[in-house]
Image (cartoon, rainbow, N blue to C red):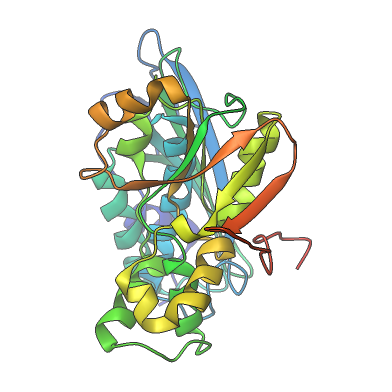
Length: 322
């Protein structure tokens, strides 16, 4: 039996996420009413996922639900903000109950994990497209792309290149590696982890931050430009996972790391005088990160691999320059 729009909302989306006390009025009305914590500032981000652009056709609906929220969580992580409320606009070719059940389960699991409540949105028919607006809050201190200065050291969290390699495996463009490594890389694309906790801990330490969504070099350059800086980056220092090296080998692994995107790690800058504070308050053994370069006054971007000059084959993803 066909399912209608309002039954779809009630059955699959009316109770997603945590039951936050600050939701005065949520799903089911014309708009949500939310109670802001005293002394906090509102932080907002939105992202859209389109089938065949952001994920392959036929992708797991649980993964799509997870990723739709994760990409927004990563934006708030880059600001050092605490996520709280989400709005979901879902465009579907048809209301398939099995698809909706899996999609909502993927969204809900990540929302619960991060204390996010779904408070509203919209549903309509058309090509598969998912838009999430995520709202949260921060104190007077927050991270931005524009706070860095020449001399600041540039870091990246976790490992990079994994998600791009995982997508290449899903699309049969990468065939090497053990089954275990291939599965790990695919999971990094299908179920990315946003570094919300790390972002919050970098407040008062990092001068600027950005999430790695379009490719490390592309996003590092965005941070540097927003801060009026250039950068010198050592690509031999990029953190590569054992799984990526197993599947791609060192040269291709570096290419995935330089420009692959979809890792949702944090790239952040730290002034020289706060390096010891970083090591003390955010130990790399607990929140892995690695220094990859330094910002400078040149306004230019120089890449090298140790003592050898390096020219990236490409910088990253751009929707209108592909």
